[in-house]
Amino acid sequence: MHKGFLKAGHLPTLFASFLYFDLSFMVWVLLGPLGVAIAKALHLDPAHKGLMVATPVLVGAALRVVLGLLVDRFKAKRVGIGAQVVVIAGLIAAWAIGIDSFAATLLLGCVLGLAGASFAVALPLASAWYPPEFQGTALGIAGAGNSGTVLAALFAPAMAIAFGWQNVVGLAAIPLIVALGVFIFAAKDSPNAPPPKPLAAYFELLKQADCWWFMFFYSVTFGGFVGLASSLTIYFNDAYALPPVIAGYCTAAVVFVGSMVRPLGGAVADRFGGVRALAVLYAVAACAFAAIAGGLPTIYLAMPVFVIGMLALGMGNGSVFQLVPQRFGREIGIMTGLVGMSGGVGGFYLASSLGYSKQLTGSYGAGFLVFALLAAVALVSISGVRRRWRTTWADLHGAARV
Image (cartoon, rainbow, N blue to C red; front, side):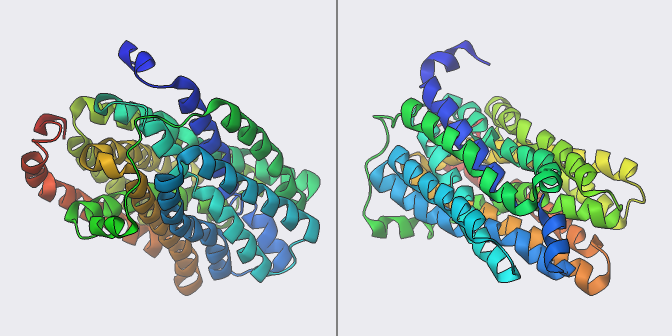
């Protein structure tokens, strides 16, 4: 890490943002690692399992826009505290009342979706403290809270066997309470945060092509990451007959790789340029998921390919957000919400499409193949906009860094 980075921002806020994001993400994907136990208890078919794990992702996507608007107007710390209190209350209520139907799991998924919207709080809070040359690294560290998905995959299946899956829902509130305490005492809003804008100004962003490009690019990288984090425990259990706990461990290993390399993706983009980094990463992801779609007969062959694909997606998440503050630094709050929303939509598509692919064709291959094609489209697209970005962004931060 560049020594100037340690002096450039506010480290307590960066740590609090990471922890807040990390444990919120743990809760956001909780239904995925618990999916095998829930499906057995409620007798769910593959399509219902896919929709169950995809619902928190979709709701989180929509609420990211809402929280992005609130952050821009009321500051990130205040909004973050309020959102976390609602999630904690929802988990405790779900545990106390009980979950005895598919509809109830979808309702719980809506509550968990608010935890996923923490993205729109943590990243602007951290970003506002750092200058452009350290945006990739700072947002990579804060965004490494993706690693919370590892905690869910690692511990939830075993805890479900030991305590019952409904009790795991209630126990999940405990680490959130700890994270909330740290957030209250350590996080601080930057005095350099841009002033709020009229609501109508936000819709102007949707008229700009660059906004839509960023939304698409992140829907592939983050959508792939969170979609797999939500679905792989069920997939490994179904496709390779792994016991739920072993399937959770395999999921945790894959997701750990993707979450830990997000800061590396931001740092690489700082060093070599975000567009160049994304072009390579999309190519790797497209090849990896095309191979998975073709069918890998054993878990020993599948795991390395999933790890390679998740490496590309995780680094891609950091690379996209190295570019966003350069282009939309004064609208970072709402852009974080919009881009984060698109990532959630991508995750909802992948998680739900895998379930429907299995339901309709008897195989997950079609779902993985379409996602590989989307990564290929992203590769062609990022290469296509490179020249225009070099020209139009030169006046802002220099074409070489793009």
